[in-house]
Amino acid sequence: MRTPTSVLHQTSRVAAAFALCAGLLATASPAGAATAKPSDAEVRASLSRVSDGTWSETDIALLKQVPEVGRLVPDPRDPGTLTAMPAHQITPSATVRSDFGTQAINCWSQLSYVEKKDIFGSRIYRFNVETDWCYDTVSYNLVRVDRAVGYISHATWGIYHRGWQVDSFGVRSIPKSGWHDKRANVEYCVGGNVGCYTTTYPYIDIELGSTAGSYPWSWKVAASSAG
Image 1 (tube, rainbow, N blue to C red):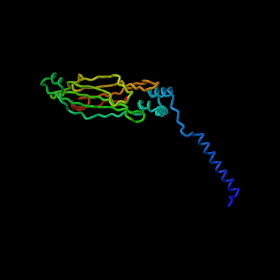
Image 2: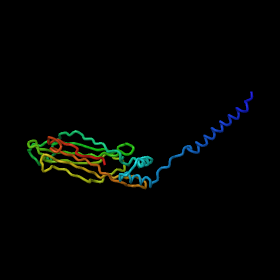
Image 3: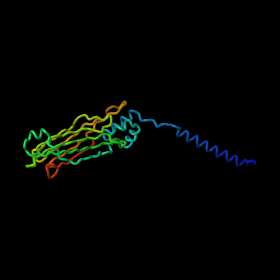
Image 4: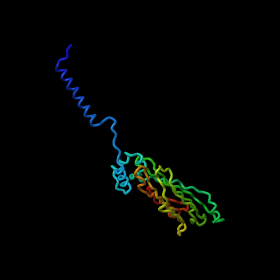
């Protein structure tokens, strides 16, 4: 049985149309074609804008194209997460027992920390502040901030703690109050031709005693930032 000539012509035109579409698609999106990564200059420019606060979502999107860099970029959209652990009573240190002798002294300890995320949403570091303070159980006066430490933990490679911008603690002349303020210098460095590109300043300020509550064991985080 023969196929009519008109049907053959119609079939040929359809086949030709499919072939043309396939050719256009192949030209527009070559199989296996990869998106070119941003240049070093573009990466440096975006990092600079993140550092000075003039960044845009375009900068975040560009840096995400280079994961080995993006994982070392603190997300400027992330205010950080503060965690304040409950305070607990501790045994006075040997130094406190020696300095205050038979005086009735109670001591307490508290840990607070802030965490910062990178532009992919993963934790990039944790900034920790630990405070031990003591008071006279008769007068309720604070007598000492016995231990006041800060440190960086859970840090991604390329994140470096470069000392302190603020490292202050003590008991005020108002004898029922004290403080512990820490502000760190945290430097960010990436590989390749970029190097170290910015420093941030996470901080936690702790108030103790009467400036925090009604009791000498009262405490509060007065201010904090993940940098």
